[in-house]
Amino acid sequence: MPVIRADDVITSVAAALQYISYYHPTDYLNALAAAYEIEQSPAAKDAMAQILFNSRLCAEHHRPICQDTGLVVAFVRVGMQVQWDSALNLQQLIDEGVRRAYTDPTNPLRASIVAPPLGARKNTGDNTPAVVHVELVAGDQVTFHLAAKGGGSENKARFAILNPSASVADWVVQTVATLGAGWCPPGMLGVGIGGSAEKAMLLAKAALMEDIDLPSIRQRGAADDLEALRLDICDRVNALGIGAQGLGGVTTVLDVKIRTAPTHAASLPVALIPNCAATRHVHFTLNGMGAAQFIPPRLIEYPPVIWQPTADARRVNLDQLQRSDLMTWQPGERLLLTGRLFTARDAAHRRLIELINRGQPFPPGVDLTNRFIYYVGPVDPVGNEVVGPAGPTTATRMDIFTEPLLKHTGLIGMIGKAERGAAAIDAIQQHGAVYLIAVGGAAYLVAQAIKQARIVAFEDLGMEAIREFIVEEMPVMVAVDSRGNSIHTTGPAHWRRDVNTSINAINQ
Ligand SMILES: O=C(O)C[C@H](O)C(=O)O
Image 1 (cartoon, rainbow, N blue to C red):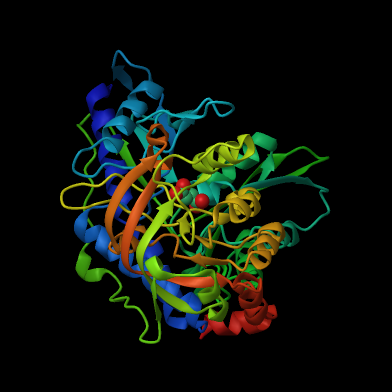
Image 2 (image 1 turned 90 degrees about the vertical axis):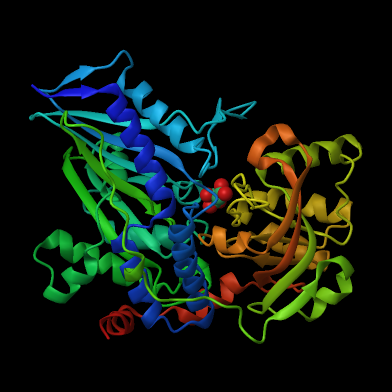
């Protein structure tokens, strides 16, 4: 009877999480490289190039692909014949592995978990606890499927109980059309169909742990109804024209994974969970013979994509910028920013707005006059770094804070990722401000442009503290101009097409 030792679980979980923080799964890289080749939208192609180049840099330097190093989700299948040599329970073993991985001094990962979820929402400091699902199965080994799921894509999870005669494909396509780009496409869709409400969600999440195989299914033709459904959803979602980062383009999803379970005669539960460009998952098995080993991918097999800023990018000096300078910037225009900017995301925004509402001054060092806020929560630095990977977070969450900040602080622009809502766009237009985007999922590449970083306020918020960054040629794109025109509206509208056109494009 195999004995599973505590230390083997802890060591394997820690090694697995480090591994997926800097190595994209090969199937995802290959699928993205293929999508890059056929992409016709210049903006989307540029974003894909940044994601691919970032991936290579991370693999070379063993630093996280994305600043959001995720919430750890573990699906564990425990063989009923194994014995355990452990004083800790399975949740505690996995949490100890998470703790070690996220506080590893050679590659610290960002602690993103807050508890309790309401009220204080204090960062737990080591990214614990993980979300653990356990299934007892026949056999004499324990299989772990681990993922580090980004918050932006998890936020776009959706669920419905459809009428049994409704079309699942229609629901998925219509739902994806409402999600915006905060889930960082191009990625994957996990779909769970059947079971009960909670079972459908678990099926959708578990489906995302599978390798990408839709391109090979497309080549040989669907073997059953489920494969046909996957192809249909994939083609129709791609025909929406959302594209990489929501900029408009040919590819939004690289695969659609579906798992099903029997359900009640009255119900058709369906769950949808997207996975972002920083897709991270791995599996391993313990059988009593020691900890799992993870073989590094061969860098020589990485897609040979080197990203460079385009020659026509506008160079912007952030330290001499006036509101009036923004008026000539066009949606889709590429900029290289040099100078000083501030960072702030969810928790810092809440505090700034509280100060405004109470009529109190901002902390010393936080003067937003003629400045930009970058929505980011970076990874801690190592070695010679001034900051770790520092890609943008979803701007939409900051929409409710945008009008008061523009009105009361002299702020002239924001940098984030994904679209803005109508109220935020109105505020941007009203105040002659702009909204810029950096590429989500290219966090280590973006961080190369950050030359100095220091915390200036709310240090207790950890990664959510307000920092001052000095950047040099930070690559961004104008997403909403000072007249309120948004590339997230015009881009997808331009690239939307009927399904047949989309199938032809992908088959070429
Ligand atoms: O938390 C972050 O840094 C990003 C988040 O995953 C998001 O996509 O909004």
